[in-house]
Structure formats: C-alpha cells, structure tokens
Amino acid sequence: MPIQPSAATRYFSGTYAEARTKFLDAAAQSGATVESFVHPDHRGALGEELATDVALLGAIDAKKILLVTSGTHGPEGFCGSGTQVATLHDADLLARLQQAGVALLLVHAVNPHGFSHLHRTNEDNIDLNRNHIDFSAPLPVNAAYADVEPLMLPATWPPTPADDAAVDAYIARHGLPAFRNAVFKGQYTSPDGLFYGGTAPSWSNKTIRAILRKYAAAATHLGWIDVHTGLGPYGHGEKIYPGRNTPEDLALAQSWWGADVFSPFSGDSASADVSGPVVTTAFDECPNARIAPMGLEFGTLPEADMLLRLRADTWLRSHPEAPAAQQREIRAQLRDAFYCDNEEWKGMVLGQTRVVLLQTLQGLRKG
Image (cartoon, rainbow, N blue to C red):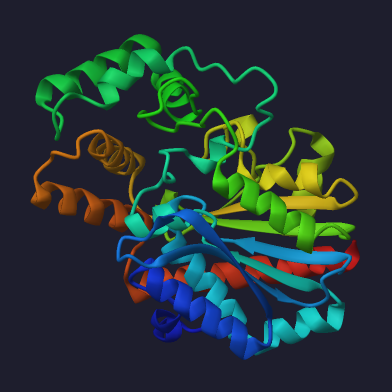
C-alpha cells in the first residue's frame, strides 16, 4: 500500500550521519549488496566519515536497472535519502521489481560533503550538475555571469537596499529570462561564485562513473531518478528531463512518465538548461543501454527566496570571518530551503516518488 503521511517521518533524518545510518541499516535489512565509496580527503561536520554508499537489490549484471540517486546538491539529500530509505522498506515495490527481473540500484549521497556541511556545492564549491562535462574540450562560456556576480554576492550580507536596487536595475535592462540564464546556467571562471562547474572532474564525478561502470556495465535499459528539491510549487514533484536534447529521448521519457515531463531545452521547466548534469554520465558509461533519466524536483520555497539563501551560502564560503551566529543562521536557512521538515511535505514527497518508481518499473518491463 502507498505510504501514509503519518508514517513518513521515520524514513527521514536530521543530519547526514543519521541519514547514512538509516540507509545502511535499511539496505542490510532488505538483503541488499552494499558498497561504500569513502571520501579520502574530508570529514563531515560532526567529524564523521563521508561516503557515497551504494545498495543493490538484484543481479550485478542485470540488464534492466532502476537507479535512484540522492544528495547531488548537498542538503537536498535529506529528501532524497528519505525516499531511498522508504523504498528499501517498501516490500510490495521490492517484490514487484524482483518479479520483473529489474535490479534496484540506490546511490546515497552523491555529494556527502555538502550534505553533511549544509552546502549545496561540494568541498570545492563545485555544483555537481555543472561538473559532468568533457573537460578535454573548451569549457562552456557564460559571458554574462561576470556582470551579475557582484550583484549576487555583495561585499556584506545581507544585501542592502542599494544592492537590491542594482539587481532590479539589471533585470529591467536585460529582462528576467536573461538574468536567470546568466545566474543559473553555470559558470567556469569564478571558483568562489555561484553555480561553479569546476575545471576538472570532481571526486563525486569520478565516483559516480566508477559506480556505473561496476554496477550498470551490462545494462541494456536504465531508468535513472535523481531526487532534487528547491524549485517549483511547494510539495509538487516536477518531472524534469535532463538527458540529451533529442526528440526521441524526450519521447521515451514522456512515454514512461507522462506528458508532464518537462524539458529545460524548451523553457517550460522550473530548471534552467544547465551544462553537465550528473545523469548525463550514463550516456558515457552505459553506451549500450537505452536510458531514460529524470530529475524529480520537489518544490519548497519561491524562487526568489531560494536564490537569496543560495547567495548567502556562497557569500559565507568566502567570508569565514562572519560572526558565528550569522553562520549558524545561514546554514539553517539553507537547510530549510531544501528540506521542509514536516509530515505534510514528506508525505507528498513519498507518495509522488512511489508513483514515479512504479512508472519506471513499467517502462523498464516494456523495454
């Protein structure tokens, strides 16, 4: 039976360490094969080990795989982890997968550093959904970003009325779509800036590729759900297509998940058209598979509020001298921006996720 909102809280956690424990315990109870990819250079906010953990239910050489990833953007992992733990406790869903011969592959905390330390980006301020590109080619260019960075990251925080007026003036001159594109698309020139993609593959990039090579090399069909939060209406799970910009691939995604799969390429999605999403690694590492990727994005706050908190997070990383109270406030506000810690929202998340997983199973069964 679908999970009722009153039961939702037990699957979610208040810290990365708690989330990891719940995930590993649930994986063990379900009989999953578990492997941990431990970060070699960093520890968590509580001094804990940081790792991207993998749980596999099914054959390691399975031809059809349902893959669910969490924590690509740090504290978005609170939501994604909850959906993964709930899935491991969902006996009916697990039985359906087993009967269909579909393996379930769960990757917990793609960005464990950001999850633990409450940063959307990783240990190097890299946005992982801008990092999975071909670094042997020229880096993507976002020339407009240089003009908006001083507006987004003023010298002091919070922004002054004059700072806000400067942002409004930029939007009035260039239009809101141009402003959003300049800010959200990603940039590769300012390591301390917003939506920075890096200049080389991150540890998380290398790790997710290693996982795909080990656990999905034999796949002929792969359905990948990457759980995100922050954009769109409160509690609504928008189905975002993050794959290749081809009519055939989008049609496959819509045949599995419905006409309400939106594409950033067409401008009808809450997400910007970004370079280097994590899910695009599947096209490199699983070249023989038919791939249907989805970013499942659960709304939390209005976009303006979300952006303000992301700006504060980025500003703080360049201002370690900020008062301790201000640092705690920024960290807490960022967590709340990506995780609504109430049963109503969690119930909405789990119900919609289960529907998507069942749809993915049906898509994989049909081939």
